[in-house]
Amino acid sequence: MIIEDYRIDEGKGKTALLVNPPVYDFAYSNTYNQPDGLLRVATLLKEKGYRTALIDFLSERKFGRIPEFPQDGTIFKGFSRKHYGMAYKEFEKRLAALSFYPDEILVTSIMTYWWESTRDTIRILRRFFPKSKILLGGIYPTLCPEHADANVGADVVVKGEIREASDSWTDVSLYDRTPSYAIINFSRGCPFSCAYCAQRTLNGVGMRYRNPIDIVNEIESKHTLGVNNFWVFSDNFLVGDIFPKVLNEIVTRGLRISLSAPKGMEPRLITHDLLRLMKKAGWKTINMAFESSNADFRQESWSRRHNTNSDFERAVRLSTEYGFKQEAGGIVGFVLFGAPEERFADVIETARYLHSEGIFIRPMPFTPVPTTAIFEKYRDYIESRRLKLEELNEKLYPFADLNGIPLEKYLGLHKWMFELNSELRKTNRVRLFGAEDLLDFQMKVPSFRLTACGCAV
Ligand code: B12
Ligand code: SF4
Image (cartoon, rainbow, N blue to C red; front, top):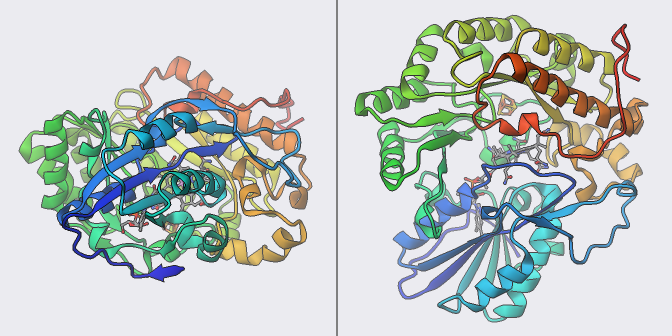
């Protein structure tokens, strides 16, 4: 059953188990993967009177074989995925040791192409607790509710937010040990609608902001518990004046914390005043979307009209003036590649430009996200190739054939960008904060080099 606008009723005397499933992927090095949506729902459940417990597979940095998986996909051949996070055996032990039989089990699910680990987790939960009501929520069920309803075995598939929980604090007290970091959100939504981004489906139209004092209260309370690092994951939070308000409050209270936004900030909105304040408040690495130095392609194919190359150049110049390039954590520029109908030479040119400016590269291999404009535009292609949801993984470069670029070449390009980062690290010996993974390429790829003229071979 699919439900929208799901509400949580009073739950005095009731029990709820919250679960963040493992990840099945070809490589996974993410270190900031707290299920912040689920942890906000956890706070609401407590407020409603529920007794709660959490099992977060990703709180363990382990990996192993995927136990049971039909590798019958068309492009899985030659690649193997792993199970990242706590092993199922350990999960079963924890379920057996749970101090209550849960009335409700709430499972979150993030990337659409990770859906199989959600299904497998629910199978185990069902076996242990056949009488519990299992609810599934998060990004995957919001973007693909019918697929989730048909495939994962939850009793209720919740599409979209639980509005009452959206501005709640995350309940990090559910972890055995206080985590070293927390995810903090300032706002929801974005005024733009880039062709590859699913934010409209996730947040609706327009922006909503949290109260800045409540945000800093949450930061301070977590800091008192021992959390020192805060990651901002909100989409485009530089729009409006929430960000300077929060930073000012952090500075006024004298909180000694580190902050960063690994999902990026909009270069157009970076100013002198903001950078001065960011530095004072403990801001570290500057992550910015650049995507491609081909401005026409960026605007026409990706509807990204609100940012220009000169916005980015200006933001880099200003950030450098405030010491971010070499002291405060480095500057990172995102490069989107593998997108349909791109020119390989543009990607090379983009990466070369960033590197020559002393900017670390965050390679963002492209995957079409269900409900986005690009997904709809290429739906026929996706269907004609019979690409399943799990195959729409950016590491498989689903548009390599369409672009006439061999997969090996894309993989090599990805690796080359990491090599450029390692080279840069030798001169800019900064600690990349929340972007440490940019120095450690995880996949095995064929050898790759660039010719003197800059062509990839
Ligand atoms: C954090 C994040 C990441 C992290 C990964 C997180 C992790 N677990 O490892 C990192 C940085 C690694 C990442 C990378 C990428 N990401 Co990303 N990422 C996000 C981001 C910013 C947040 C995701 C998240 O955890 N949200 C928390 C949500 C669930 O919380 P919430 O909405 O407040 O929760 C509410 C409801 O959902 C509900 N709810 C939540 N859980 C539950 C459970 C139950 C039972 C119920 C009832 C309700 C409920 O209640 C909450 C309160 O209202 C989203 C964008 C966004 N702003 O959401 C993109 C997003 C998920 N990423 C996306 C993409 C495209 C990528 C990349 C492919 C980009 C690229 N080209 O490289 C990469 C590759 C990922 C990979 N293979 O490793 C896409 C979706 C992709 C997809 N197909 O699913 C998104 C949606 C961005 C976008 N706007 O299009 N990402
Ligand atoms: S990519 Fe960024 S700017 Fe574009 S719609 Fe998504 S959140 Fe907004």
